[in-house]
Image (cartoon, rainbow, N blue to C red; front, side):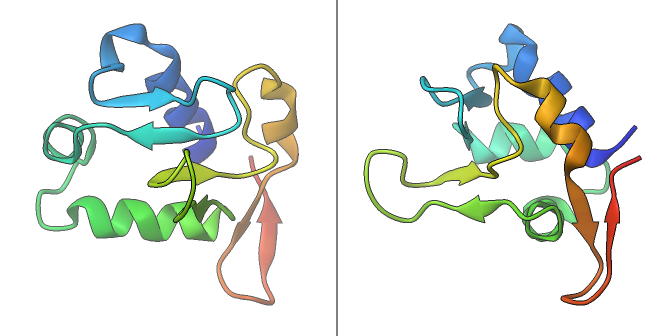
Amino acid sequence: RSFPVLIRDILDDETNASVITWLPHGKGFKIVNRQKFIKQFTPDPWKRYSVFTKDLVKWNFVLIERGRDSGSFYNELFQRDQPELQETMKFCESKRVCILAP
């Protein structure tokens, strides 16, 4: 399963809402508790959060740095109420090489 599918599965499980949650409008998500997120969802304790955020960047997520959604992650093709959009998401190994999500 692709990275976006795994993230969606985590977000759609309401038992994770105290750790990671969709924004109210559904066009992004926020990690509410970074320490719990690292313990629950990162497989290698040495890689942790920085690798997760690098993977988000490779999938064209951006970190919102200002406004009411500050600290959340956004990708126009990753929305709560339109899961079919993520089928067109691309993983970019570099600025020149992107592949369609499996």
